[in-house]
Structures are given as structure tokens and as C-alpha cells.
Length: 311
Image 1 (cartoon, helix red, strand yellow):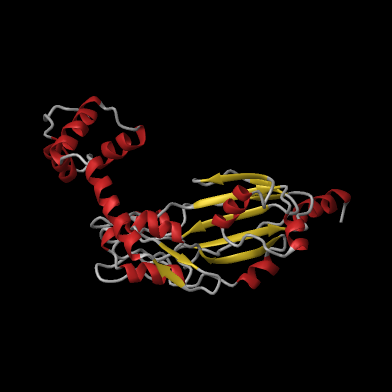
Image 2 (cartoon, rainbow, N blue to C red):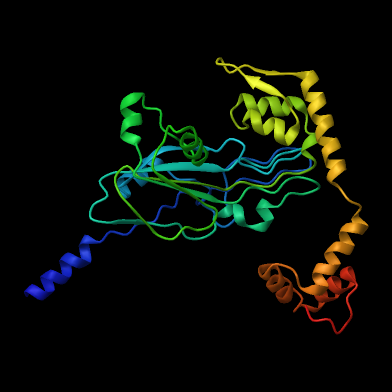
């Protein structure tokens, strides 16, 4: 083999590409009108309902090590019945070699409309989030007590508390390729689903149980459901009934104060429609959708638009 051929082989085979199929089968089910959605256990796009094996990925993709992979507490669409909780994982980079480029393609399962939408007053699921943390102090955390972040949410919490240091960025869209080195972190969360019904109609006991099993932070319980509760070091959850009644009453009053009649909302939105003062992305969506005669008729009737009005 000549030197040119040998040189080509070195360049060709030193490069190593990989794909982590961690999210295949990693979607949660939306809430039902009578029960909560199932957590991150299925896929609507493949028969392989399997979120994959961490150990398999670690030997196939040597630079990426799992610091954690589990359900992200509170990461769901809330409602009288909440959507299934999505999953999160944190990858720790080690022995990254000359150059390691990491990116995430696709919008993952929680971004599909039939999975993430809330219904009958339920909240939609949160979107996919990616967190990158470069030049971190992870070795110091490991030497100190081994307490390292295990979810994307914890990466952000540790950074806010000053426990985790480094160049930390939160991405709410597919991040561009990141050049990553030793002790950098790549964390993401996906696969959440939407809720059904008004969160303030959820049984207080169900909220307390979610706190107990670690699927709902106490601060979420107060904000979303008006349930005031605390969890002690032994895992026992105690709800303050008087404070809960007052908080829920306050949330209802705040809603009423911020609400306007539907007729007023319709008039305000009609002005935006007629003046095209809508986000370009939405305008493009409506223009595309109204290319179908059925929806075009529905759209024009709803907003009472003239036949010659150009969307």
C-alpha cells in the first residue's frame, strides 16, 4: 500500500461517529379524562418501546458517561390529571480525544402536538431542553462528597446555588454542535406529555403523593395546584390544610382579576389578524393551513373576514 493510501486510511478510520438512541421509546403518555398519563415508557413512532440501556451506550460511546438518567420531577403538563413525566439525563465527558463534537438532532417526542398539548384546561407539556456546561468543577464535587447533578434541572439548580461552576447554557431549541472536552456536561430533558383538566381541580391527596414519590417538587405543588406541603428528611409529606385552602382561593381570585370576557379577547385578536400583527411563524402556519378549502372557510368564518381578505 502506497503512502497516500496509508495516509487516507489513518484519516478515515481515526474519526468516530455515534448516535445515542436514548430517546427511542422515550415518550410519556398524555393525561386521560380519568387518570394521569403514563411516564416515559413508550414511543408513538416505533415498536421499540425501550429507552435503552445506559451501560450499552457507555461502551459504544466511550467519551459520554451517565451521571444520571431518570424522570425529571415536575416535567409534565399539569392538570386535574397530569401528563406523564418526561425523562432527563446528564452525560459527563471524559477522555474526549483530539476533538469531540456533540449535537442533538430532531425535536424529540415531547414536541409533537398530539403528545404535548393540554386539554380541557390542562397545561401543555414543557418543551425539550438541553443544558451544556463547559469547564466544570465536577472533579471537585466528586472528591468532596460525590454529589453530582443527575438531571437537566439539577444542573441548573446546582449552577444557581454556586455548587456547579463553568460556562453553563440552557437551550430551548436544538443547539448547534458543541466542541466538548473533559469534565464538560451535556444534559437534556424530553418526552413529557400534556395534562387534562384544571390543575386546581386535582385532588390534594394526589398532589401530596406526587411529592412523596419525587415526581413533583413542593414549589410546583404550590404554584400549579395551590397545595402547600413540605417533605421532611424521612420522606414524609405534610400538607398544611389551612394554607392550601387560602392559596387555592388566592389563585382563583388572581385568575378572575386577570381574565377578560371572550368577546373582548375576540375583538382584540381580530384586530391582530386583520392588521397581520402576528408572529411571522404563525402567519406562515395560517397561510399554509388555509390553502385547504375546509380550514380556509372555518378560519374566515371564525374571524368574520371578507372573502377578498388576504391572510
